[in-house]
Length: 445
Image (cartoon, rainbow, N blue to C red; front, side):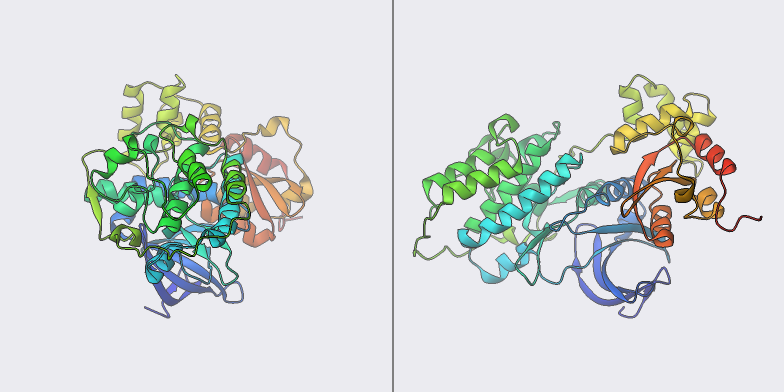
């Protein structure tokens, strides 16, 4: 209800709607002069799904690295008051799925072109950081009061989507409609898969419906060529259809390359005065009410730590199964269990985790630690969060941390220091030794 406090910090103001992962609320952060944030409170089915929570935690860690004017900022993941919730930047405005449904006709090309450049720039920035979105669709694009677009839910909605699919056996049509053929078939994904999602979204905004919205949808996405949009020029259609090629190799190499080609094809052509078609398909509303039931997962998930260790030859399936059984009976992380069992060393785990999360690994025995940077936090915070600041770079504080998924810990360090945290992964023993060797704020003289 409005007025409810979450984590003794966030005061709920207004219910904004529901999405793939839960209820979305506008809230005020009472610790930061009542700044407004968006709170996404997870559905109960997701709160009880340990894998979904771990996946979203990992995706939020990666999304936090994105600093871009056309990406909705992700703050942190909270576990408080018997609820899991995510705090994010609040954007005053509606998403493009809502706007498209409300107006009942497509957007004109002249309005979509600036959005295309903004989205392409945001996606290429994310791709250069090693981050894929994997769920680009009109409902995940917000339009602010200045007519600028912001892309939300990098990877997070996909983790929630997969958790709900496991729990309920259904997937939202709104998600499937914009998936690339390789994502549907469980193939390897790269930036060209996100390009397909961007092109599918633009096709929807310009035509009023996704490229394929009539059964058999899954078969058509994988094998049928989309039709050109009747009121657009041949040149514009050619660019759109190339970005919707069935194989990644047939598409543009990047989202910005696609955007540039689309702008060049549009040229100075004045759009036709022919009335834009009325939207009649319900799929464009992108609601959870329309579902496609299936017996298999159509989502290619990023590799988990255990799977990566097996593929790297550091672990076999039997060892992984034994460790997972022990993990289920304890509150320990998988890496801790593997070390305790003597199967792998700390450094094996840290380096594999670094590869999985695209966060650099650092050996503190070979790294000079900036003592003044280290003194920005207390010894208690360093020990509780098993992390140590090692350098400053402008407004960023580089910290070495043993558990990069400890988002509350990262958030606490940012709040305590006023810096934006940049992560490095180090072994727990390296961090403990560094903590013992350094002086901290509040240490006895």
